[in-house]
Amino acid sequence: MSKPPSSAPVSAANDVTPEPTPVQWADIVQQLGAEIAGPLSAALEQIQDLATTGQIDRRGLRLLRRSVDEARTAGMLGQQLARLASGRLRLNRERQHLAQMLRSVLAQRSRETQARGVQVRQSLKPVEIWADGALLFALLNALMDWALANTHSSVDLRLDLTPWPVKARLSCRFAHRPLDLLGNEPEARDASPGLDSLAWRLLEQTAITLGVLPLREQDSGITLLTLEFNQLAPDDAPAPDHTQARLEAEAQRMGGNSRPLAGCQLLILSANRELRSEAQAAVRHMGMLVDVVASVAEAEQFCREGLPHAMLFDAAQMSDPLLHLIAEVMRDAPDVCFVEMFDGEHRTQLSTATNDGVARISRRHLPDALPSLLMFELSKRS
Image (cartoon, rainbow, N blue to C red; front, top):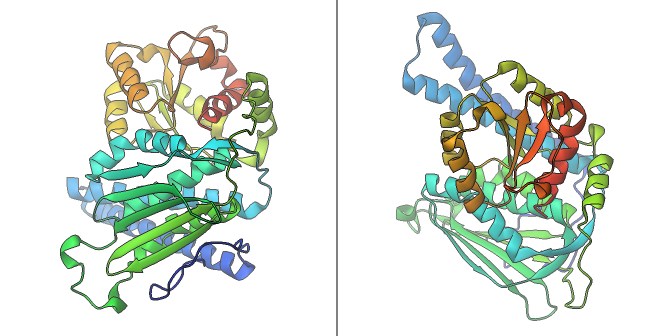
């Protein structure tokens, strides 16, 4: 695709990368099938062993869960790639604080990086660009997904400006082989299959859709990815209008079958199975990755492994531990949104209208109001 040979020098990205050809999209679809089929085949073996023996040990259960998670993740990536391939994206280019948005992504994913034992080192120059906020946010998350899945070292992020012509340049550097093996193997064996995974395809295609050329170099076990943003925002450019009315109108426009939040992760917390099902049904058309937990303890464990973009919780679960969890997440990742569901009558409230920053909705309004509510809350990321 746009990956240059590791032996060739890489020049600045002055030209716009052409859109993928049908053959290239066919390759991506084939890769999607392989990345789903592989984990599901492993899961099927575990299930067959369970059916034969009638038991499964902790290791087998862990392997089964990992296989299902890998297949599910591949499906989620396929959803996002399908949105990019549809040609129906309507980009809303506005002034974006690139460094601030990147710091926000890193804050939201800090628990995940800590759980993986990965240090993220950053040197970020304040830079403002013109870009679609939602797609830029998706690009930065795709960058972290790909880097964290492949690194055997720290992940070094640097944001600066090129001398001339002036562009914003975001570079990501990490070792894609164990550090003790660097320099000990021939260059021909330097490639790592994970570098060309679906996560890379999504990162690559998201960048291209934004008009950014992803330049990738590999040398002696070190990977360097550079993203150059051509459209800098001048100092005297007017700030975008982020009024509540515009956001609600945008939420309405992006409803229906456009799957506007494909790839965003929603955690539903409720011990009530029917309520969980109603909430899932309300957001099914939005393409979100939905996880459910039945207790605050399970929600805490989930958040330790990685924060969702939004948490929808049953008011019946309100307790000191849940309040502590909400406060902790808000401190670590202010962009995570919280929505409280009430079984009885309750007026729908946006987080901007509550003292604690938690949005609220009645159970009976889930089908008609929850999608727009989530669109508003999650749009504040940009």
